[in-house]
Length: 186
Length: 330
Ligand SMILES: Cc1cc2nc3c(=O)[nH]c(=O)nc-3n(C[C@H](O)[C@H](O)[C@H](O)COP(=O)(O)OP(=O)(O)OC[C@H]3O[C@@H](n4cnc5c(N)ncnc54)[C@H](O)[C@@H]3O)c2cc1C
Ligand code: SF4
Ligand code: FES
Ligand code: FES
Image (cartoon, rainbow over the protein chains, first blue to last red):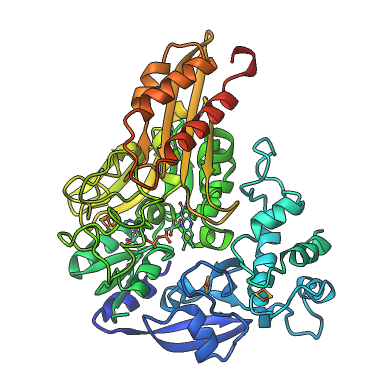
């Protein structure tokens, strides 16, 4: 890390706010944030991006899932100030600039994976993250211990269910969510 | 949540210095436990010293064949690392049995070791809890304690340690590397967490302001087979009701190296020394495994509502031991 950043934090330790820059869906935003601001509230309240949802606010439901530097995380448990310089992608930014939806979004639509829809943005971001993890060779709890390490992990239904277990759906739309993810497996 | 100062540390010394300079400071790792506890009011630090950008994010092989995991290595990357998967499968399996994909991406090795108990009274400011506020009593003792300890507890606290990872580290004879104002030191993982005794507010042997810099997995634990198994209320994304990590090696038809640690039974990962002693030099038969595990669990003193944990832990241990021993000799 660069030393400027280290001192930016330590120069004024008494303050409870810091200037923080985040790239959100490709656009840089520089804000003075209260250190207590978690990423989820920053997205929803400061940037008006209400795709990520607040379910439990304690890491227990996955409704707030977004991608930070390409990895899925629970935005309700991340202080925004600690993410200075990070790249954040929310469900609003998955499609990029074009009109075309992200393949996971399309599959969710085609499979009619929602009832109330509250968990959906988190499910979609989580699925995008999970697919990248499997491609990068990350095992899961249900991956055969004998599977070669470092190689892409093929995803079957059990793998999909396990890898998306961090996203609860109180409407119980799980079977169709798993169908949609199966559709986009390369 | 109370306002707090924020310091981003770039080096280990910067982190420990900043901690010393800010009374009431806490280190911020992935935040998946600390931020949660701050929202609940259980933690109210005056300052956070962010250690996420310390250069402790790597896994390296040391000249003696051991493997050093930096404290900032994320749980997901630890579990996926080829050297960890190939040499220490129990560790990879334990990490993957915990939390969710999202949480493991944020959680760090250091933070995982220091996560606090999930005892509901500890998390509820309106309830008495000796761990949160020494001297107030233990709400769980006469309350809801189905998830609580059956071994090594005290009348002050019956909480369990929730980490899956720590159970594997204890069985694998790993050590925890620490750095503080008094210098660097190393503590065996099996002795890093404490029993509650009269000081349940102290979860571990870490000293105030000390930073976890890494975890070292010894070369000697890389050869033996190892595995982790966890029982929980749902198939995924739930804390353990009981779990076990086993490291087992046979030579000339007898056990010549064994490490067994139970999770969710005590205030720390429970290294089953009695069982190990009974197994060393013995042929790996079902009878020998049963004898050893029963010897260990004979010390259990279940509470009113958690007696189920003893037979559950017994079956988990026998299953894993049986799987690790070559079928021909069992
Ligand atoms: C819904 C949910 C389910 C979960 N399920 C499981 C489960 O099934 N199994 C399981 O094992 N875990 C589970 N967890 C817990 C999770 O594994 C921990 O929260 C995580 O490992 C903590 O790591 P962290 O880096 O986020 O720590 P933080 O929250 O950043 O820190 C935890 C503590 O460690 C201190 N700290 C952090 N890093 C250092 C360091 N390098 N040196 C010194 N002190 C440090 C902090 O000050 C704090 O006191 C679950 C969590 C949630 C929210
Ligand atoms: S078991 Fe320990 S953590 Fe739980 S209420 Fe009692 S003292 Fe507190
Ligand atoms: S709102 Fe973040 S996990 Fe529930
Ligand atoms: S569709 Fe309603 S919570 Fe999932």
